[in-house]
Image: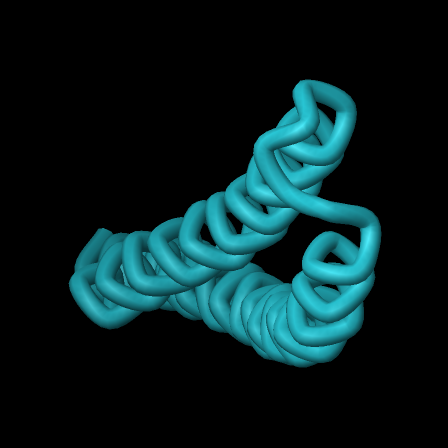
Length: 109
């Protein structure tokens, strides 16, 4: 069970990093387009077309990142619950073992 928890935590971490990277990349591309417009590399009309196209891509990127983060959050919660369940199970096994040992000792003494 611990291996499953570690695998889940690893995959969730990767998904979170990926979502953050997509958002960060979109913000950087926006800054580059603004800089190109200010430098005069593109006309206002071309910049407007690029902005509209980029806004659509950016919205989709943000939406997918949000879904990825939401899914990652759910996986984090589930993995944490599994970890707690495993801890409780081990603790309960240890406690029952001690009880059996005490019972055996009382029976033979």
